Amino acid sequence: MKKFTLYPETIMKHFKRPKNMGKMRNPSGVGKVGNLLCGDVLWLYIKVKKGKDGKERIVDVKFECFGCVVAIGISSVLTTLVKGKTLEEALKIKKDDLLKATGPLPPIKVHCSVLAADALKEAIYDYYARNKLPIPEHLKKEHERIKKTLEKVEERFRKYVELQKEISKRV
Ligand code: FES
Image (cartoon, rainbow, N blue to C red; front, side):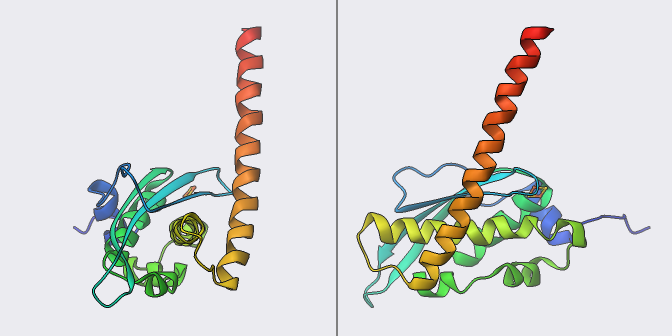
């Protein structure tokens, strides 16, 4: 009998054995993003090197995720897709490409796929900013949106921690 699963097989495979998980030493760029709906957070690290063709490529990628099954699974899938890509190619990867690679998610979990796609944009933005390289206009706009969301998530988290402290003083 086929086992029932809420998530596509690819998600479960990557969740159970995530690829490229962990912190990277001396990354070229880091993307930190938060999900406003659930408060989950993802860090994506990239190592960028210029190839013989003069193009900057993502030669290594890692992630750390404080999130759900889908967030972890899809982050792992993303890392397998971006390795070896030029920055321009990587920037073209969208949430829908990730969903194509994993298979459809239950509608209530689609928001979980946004984290990985946004973290990649932020890591590339960070690489450009660190190296004082020109940042494409569309990426600047995305960065502003993602940064604002993360600030809201962090503010909510701070309030939550304060509340926890208050409660633990009373009990
Ligand atoms: Fe938060 Fe999935 S529930 S990313």
